[in-house]
Image (cartoon, rainbow, N blue to C red; front, top):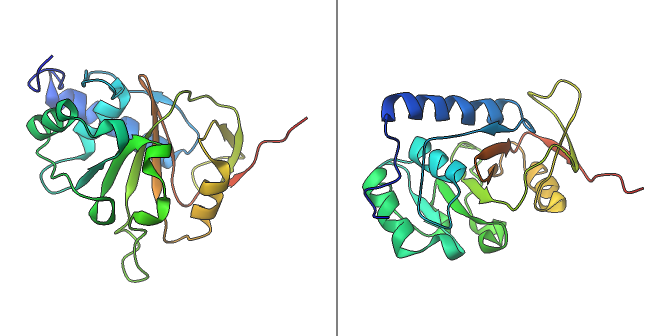
Length: 190
């Protein structure tokens, strides 16, 4: 595989479809959708590749954490999006596995005047299922459940609202989101 491979073969249609999928999961936290069309280099999942192709461009600074910061991934992103790569303090988006993105305090959470100037973290997870933490809030009719990497960290992030980080979780060809406006509670243990 080269940096030229793995992008959307029909960019206008596939990026619009992927954008709709990302907007759906952001508007309906806990909802899981499938994103197809991208074939990025390992270790990126196809869903993470589709998110990057859809949301990143030459004006959106991207931070690559851990194993995502490889020459193959850098070249693929440079060719397909032109997104400038930066450190965590200056990024609009960050991509990595949960542990590699720690500590969350290194990412911008916005300011009182501009809460929208926060980072969105694209987190590769091992599983993405409708079980685990309980989610309530905007976009959720009653409640939803979602397997999240660290319920406590997401609860602490929500406490910063209207500041805070937004999270897009990816696994294989699936994506879900936990915006900062979502309230989480730990799953009940029987």
